[in-house]
Image 1 (cartoon, rainbow, N blue to C red):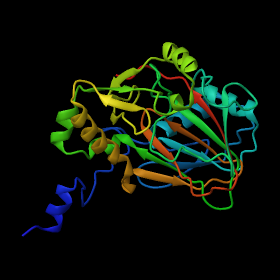
Image 2 (image 1 turned 180 degrees about the vertical axis):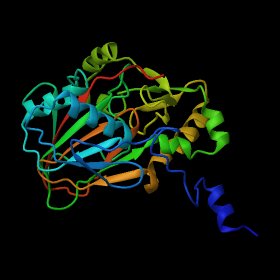
Image 3 (image 1 turned 90 degrees about the vertical axis):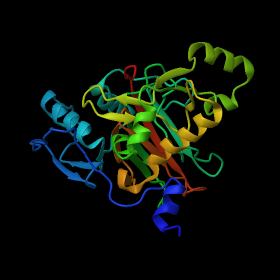
Length: 302
């Protein structure tokens, strides 16, 4: 007789408790002295209170914010009426910023604007990691709410170290050492005319990254594939690559690995692009939602 658990296993879905390890093995968390940190859950996401992003962030405060970002993967700030210039200055604390070649700019080149309304539908409602089609994907991103609908438009993040930790041992062994190709062609490239596509392809050729990357600071193993930009796994037949990518991308969909943030005007989020994927819900159309984002240049994954 087929049991419920057997039937669930045949469908590739797991049941029962999951390993929720927020910190690397052996790491210890320390108190924060310069702000109040309020976790959103046991694994990922925390709100920071007591920091005014309109003011310069000194080295001691930055060190604590950076430690909190590494520990919680996503940090949230409320009631931060900053402009694009201060937005850029805050993001630059973590490194140089990209000027996105495809997205509309805001008031400064390093800050892109996502303006959605009845005519411009949000298409970010898919699990993804920013700009993995670059040879050196983003370290992180800072997103600011300019105008939000009364209801809807939340953003979710998933911890991809936890997603890796909870893969079956045979799947972990199967993907060890594999690489995948990431490409902008299936998202941004679809709307380009042939000449522009050829020019952009020459500037941004497909990038090959590890399926499992090692976080350069924490040392955590993290799944590094996503539904938007990952085209195929190198060395596998098409059907095997599709099957394996579907299984790995599904790991982001489990609520145990997620945090969900309800935006308000002047809310700000910063996340570690090396450790997470995110999903912007599109349940607010045709209402207006305007967000601005700065992306911090990162390093080549290994």
